[in-house]
Image (tube, rainbow, N blue to C red; front, side, top):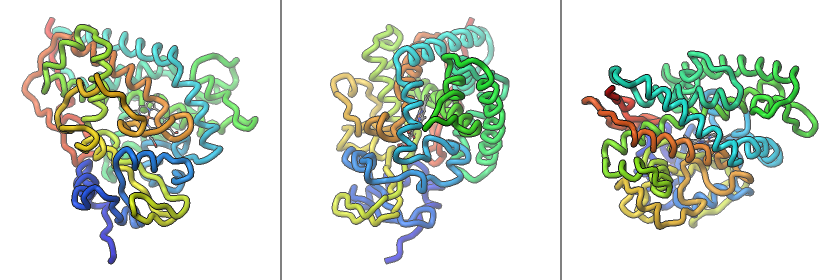
Length: 398
Ligand code: HEM
């Protein structure tokens, strides 16, 4: 039987698309067509393990050009095999050491405090917009990229426009082009100087098989640090949403309870929508849960669906940080930034940074005395990436 192409359904249903399809197939893998190609959707910790098994999927032929040309760029996300392992080592070295994580998180905290001082006694500010500027500034200072008025806007545009073909997409393409060109020049300048310890210099002088990266590719990898750091603002806006909807979560954050803060951060990353699904292409004929997956099939891992599956997370639509207090988290269960070992596969190398930055800003937000004027905090699940409509407007009295 010919299968209906599902691309339009994703465009209209967003995050609900795959969970709906999978519910109709009673949780089994769902064969379909997507983007004019044969595809299959899978979900759950076993599916994530299958997805991240090294021999199973490749990325370079799986990522659609509109996503590469806006969100990712032609860098580490699009590599496979040895080329990926070599490039990934650069990110592991730059992003996964405690001292780097702590430095960036405390820089973000300090800049957030300074910004919050400026909100006192003024009118409403958008927590989302303000946090994008705080984080772009922190990322720029930490990496050695010069900050300018348009940096946060460009980095946000790259994330905001990847899953649509309208004006948001055009803005994303323009932002990427502009920043890749600008940062390629910065890489060239760094190469004429003595190497230092900052990420710009380390990427500029990084060798692969004895060669420097071409400056455009080096710029792409630099953007692969500053763009997603700025994207943590989506999660901070969600944290603001959670504090408003579930005010009982505030006290322990305010008290600086570190175990609870980590649990709150994990629950924000589980509960709220960000990456809807991940995609790879079958390298050979595969088999999963009694479903044939012929070589060349697109395999879609339903991230949002997995985070709201009652078999994995009882009462998944309850926002309950406590669920993380007494529960170890398996490496394929909570997958907002991918699953498995980040050193070996494509899992996000910025997860520690995300958790640290979100934790420190969530505590600060909980400690800040503010109120929220009437506004629409609704989250439209058909818009990818989603965020509270109002951006979480807050007023900080004198
Ligand atoms: C990869 C999500 C923050 C750097 C990824 C992937 C996801 C993701 C879903 C792809 C996993 C895969 O393809 O299997 C997020 C989210 C973040 C975040 C939701 C927070 C809002 C960060 C930060 C950094 C970062 C803070 C760097 C400072 C990267 C890089 C990759 C990646 C370089 C490519 C890894 C590879 O292909 O091997 N991220 N990320 N991310 N992320 Fe993040």
